[in-house]
Length: 93
Image (cartoon, rainbow, N blue to C red; front, side):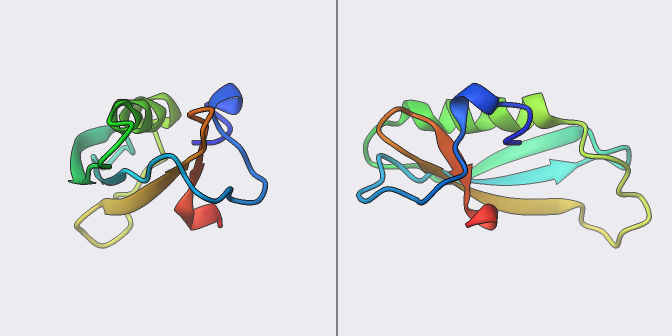
């Protein structure tokens, strides 16, 4: 997701405080395309970051074939947004 969105992401230290932390559950199809995205956590402020996170997932897709993996083909990601509305996936922290 970071590679697909270089201007809207960061890889350094996570700033404190963060602007927002939306959490998404992404379900994939067998070929790695996005089947569904559910919002598991909507931030209390900067609610627009949810749509930024969803757009980042779609831009990064397809994620590669997952048919050889056990079902369900889902993953959860927290997006750590800074004040410039750039994100870092929590899984990279």
